[in-house]
Amino acid sequence: MKNTYLGKEIPKLGFGLMRLPMIGDEVDIEQVKHMADIFVENGFTYFDTAYPYINGKSEEAVKEALIGRFPRESIQIASKMPVWLCNKPEDFNPLLEVQLKRTGAEYFDFYLLHALDRNRMEQMDKIGGWDFVKRAKEEGLIRHFGFSFHDKADVLDQILISHPEAEFVQLQLNYADWENSDVQSGKCYEIARKHNTPIIVMEPVKGGNLANMPGEAGRIFKSKEPGKSVASWAMRYAGSLEGIITVLSGMSDLDQMQDNIDTMKDFSQLSEEEYATIEQVVDVLAKADTVPCTSCKYCVDGCPQKINIPEVLGSLNTYRTYKDLKAVKGHYNWVTANSGKASDCIACGYCEEQCPQHIAIIDALQEVAGVFG
Image 1 (cartoon, rainbow, N blue to C red):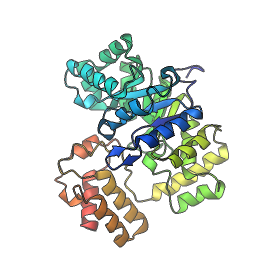
Image 2: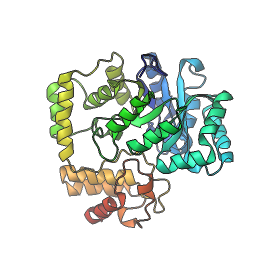
Image 3: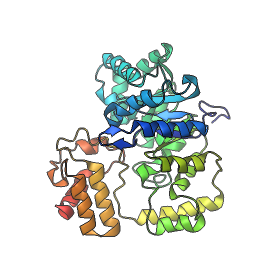
Image 4: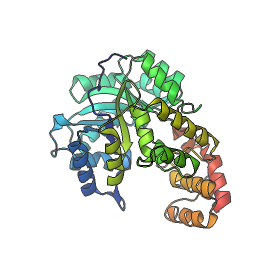
């Protein structure tokens, strides 16, 4: 990677707008405004949204919380083309028009073909997805284009060989997935570096799983740095990588934001001793029996039984960790009160096709049904 690259000057904490604070089914826009104010006041500038986040309400929050409240050139706004809704070349422009109208952004600083894998890569090549983003850039509707990625390293290599015009890639990078044979964080990182492609980091705390770690893993971190949060280790791990544009964090409350700002504002690279501490934790996590769901919710909208899969799998993980059936069953009944239960699964396979973590969701739901009914 060259010493100077796209996004090198961007502060290394990005505000991910996937998991915003909510009041019922609506975004708590006043809290989002307050969080955005604090974020910008501390020198951070990158905001990340996408077409499907919170059923479009995330992009709408951009318009209310950002546009007109900050000089447009002082912040970067990123969004993503929902490629799974595109079956022909004519499908792209109307979707981008909706996104620009929702956000009021006039243009996107960073625009991504969303969640490419092998199948979607082939579909984009077939219907001209890359031609579309190049035209959008020429027309001034986007400043830079790239893609987010959910597949194996060999597929990433193939995309970057075929499309050297991609200006950046968004990858899931965290210490827990670095050697994971399904996610392949480490291998994907090395592929991006080989191609000199700048990287936006997503899921640095793995959907919160690396922020709340009871038991031995959490105790290891606290014994080394009692005053630092567990999440701060994951954020610094991602921020210590080379060739990074920014590290996205889906902050859903002020406490999470303040912790991230405390960690990333006066950033310090991990030391060799700190890397060794993380390796201890990785060894512990490798022995843990939990489902690696990040609550991205890509599996939810198309589920014919309306099962809130991340919440259901979260109940299973809590049970596996604490073995308190009565307490966890109460929570499970609550989260499934207005949606499908695990026992409603018809094993259609939609969820597993969408899952970026490649989880055997059907098997997990069967286990949940056996435990909670």
